[in-house]
Amino acid sequence: QVQLVESGGGLVQTGGSLRLSCAASGRTSSTRVMGWFRQAPGKEREFVAAVWWSIGTTSYADSVKGRFTVSRDNAKNTVYLQMISLKPEDTAVYYCAAARNRIPVGVKSEYDYWGQGTQVTVSS
Image 1 (cartoon, one colour):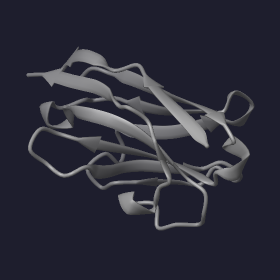
Image 2: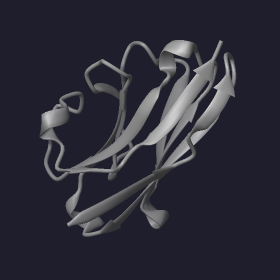
Image 3: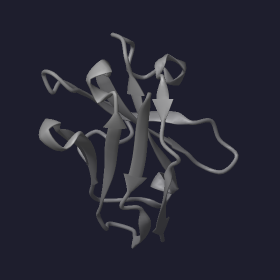
């Protein structure tokens, strides 16, 4: 089993920045890729970004490219999502997820473990 705990959410004004963290514990060596997803009220959970533990390859949704950066610290078993130039439409609960296998990173059903989420609210 793998446990994921997100932190770093909060309230920020339009144009502001936040850094989310996802601390992984348990059998983290069994996971290959870490993803960030978000879910706004009344909407489906959507892919935001992903990073592969071993080689650090990243992937982003078009809506966040150039504004969000995903990174990992293997020694700390922690993944980060640096968000800048935030917009009201970025408001959502942000979830961290982990997958054991090689997967299409944008498909939420391919992930095996999920955190509880952290709220990000961007005021206009």
